[in-house]
Amino acid sequence: MLLHDLILNRVSDHGSKTALIRGDETLDYSTLSDQISAIANGLSSLGLDSGERVAVYLNKRIECVLSYFAVSMAGGAFVPVNWVLKPPQVQHILNDCGVAILVTSAAQAKALEGTLKECPTLRHIIIIDDASTDYDLPRIKIGKWSDLLTHSGESGSLHQRIDNDMAAILYTSGSTGKPKGVVLSHRNLVNGAVTVASYLENCEDDIILAVLPFSFDAGFSQLTTGFSVGATIVLLDYLLPRDVLKTAAQHRVTGLTGVPPLWNQLAAIDWPAEAVDSLRYIANTGGAMPVATLGILRDKLPHTTPFLMYGLTESFRSTYLPPDQLDQRPTSIGKAIPDAEILVVREDGSLCDAGEPGELVHRGALVSLGYWNDPDKTAERFRPVPHPLSELPFPEIAVWSGDTVVRDEDGFLYFVGRKDDMIKSSGYRISPTEVEEVVYSTRLVSECAALGIPHKKLGQAVVIAAQSENADDDTSNAIIEACQESLPNFMVPSAIEWRDSLPRNPNGKIDRKRLKSELEDLFRDIA
Image (cartoon, rainbow, N blue to C red):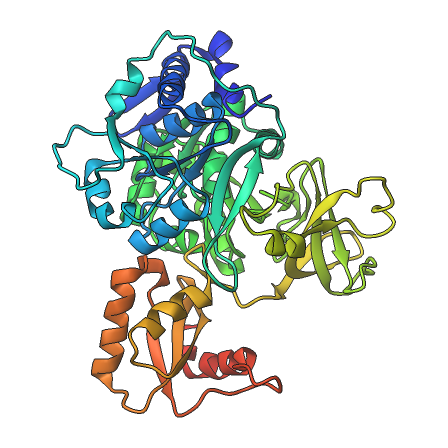
C-alpha cells in the first residue's frame, strides 16, 4: 500500500463523502481522487523522474494536499516547506535535496525570485493562482496549476514504486547547523496513519481540524489518519486562538491536535458550546503539556478524551499515554504506540532497569530511512538495535532519539531531558546555530550563544547571550531587526543579554549549561 492509496481506496465506499474543507471550498473523496490523478499525470508530463523531489511552499490549503498525494502517485517525493520560512531557509531546503519542481503562489514566487536563481536543480515552478506576475527566471519554466488539472482522465506513464521507497522529505532542525531532511517511506507514512488512527479510534464520522503545519510530522498526520478511515479534514491557518474554536464549533469538529503553546492559549479562553459538545478527543504533541493546562482543558471539555503523545520526525510517533492513566500519571509520556517497541538504553547499549535514566530508542515500522544527503548524522542517529536484538544477518536499524527518559516499574515512560541543545519554542524545534549565524552576520558581536529559556506561553523563548565591546540598546535593536529579516518569527530572539565574556567549559567551548542556568535565573519573570 502506497501513500496515495489512503485516498484512492476510499472512493468505492466514501466517494460522495466530504474529504476536505477549507473556508467555502469542499472536495469529496471522488473529486479529490480524480484531481490527484490529473495532477500526477500533469507532473509526469513535465518529466518528473522516479524519486525526484517536488517542494510545496504554500499556506495550508487544498492545493497542498493535492500536491502531496499527486507527487506520491506520480512516483516522486514531496517536500513540504513551511510557508512562514524566509528565503534563506527555503533556499537551503530546495538546494539540499535538489528540488526539481516547486509548487507555490505568484506572490511567494516573486518574493523568492532572487533565491530561486541560486537553485540549480529547479527547472519548473507551478503557480497555483491566476495573478499576473513577470519573473526574471529565464532558466526556469513557469507553469499554471490549472494546466496540470487538464490531464484528467489520462493514463500517463507513472513510475512504479514499492512501500519502502521514499515518499517525502520533512525538514527538522538539529542542535547544530541547518535543518536536516528526514526521509520518509510510503511504509512509514501509511503505517503511521493506521497506527495512530487505531488508538485515537478514528472513524469515518470524525471531523478533524488540521491546525499544525504540514511540514510537521504531526501536522501531516492529520491528513493521513483522517484519510485512512474516510474522515473529513478541515484545513485552517489561524491568526488567533479564537479562530480555532470558532472553526471547531462551525464544523462540529471531533478531533483536534495541537502543541503546548496553543493549548495554553485555548485553556485561557471560553469555548463555544458547539465545540465542547462535538469534540471527541484532543491530542498533544511537540513538548510536554503543562499539568495545570491539562486540568483546565479537562474541566472545560468534560466529554473529551485527551491523548498525550511523544514523537520524533525520525520515527513519527513513539509513545502515547492511554487516557485512563491521566489521573495516575499526568507527567508520563506513556508507552510505545502499537506495532513499535521503545527501549531505554545505557551508553554502553545495555538496557536500563526501571527507575534508571537512559536514552530512548525506537524500533519498528515507523523508523524513517535516515537524513537526506547526510550519512554522518544518519549513522549517528540511526543505529542497530541494542544487543541481543542486533544478532541478525542484517541488523535492524532503530532511531536513537538523543532524549533521556526513565521507565517506571509498570513500564510507563517519563521524559527527563534532551542530550543536545535544541530549543523548543511554539512547538518548533530551533537550531541554536542557525540563530547564531544570523547574529554573527551583523558583525555587532564578538561571540554569542542562543539558548532556550522557559516561557509560560511559548514553552521556551529564544534568548541571546552575547559579548561586544560597544553594546547598547541600538545594537540590540539592530540585531533583532536582522533576525526579523532573515528568520521566521518563532526563531527571532525575545531578548539579548550582554556579557563581558561567556563562560567556558574545560574544553574551551562555551559552557551552555552554566550560561542557560544563569539566564534562567535572570529571566525568571518570563519562566
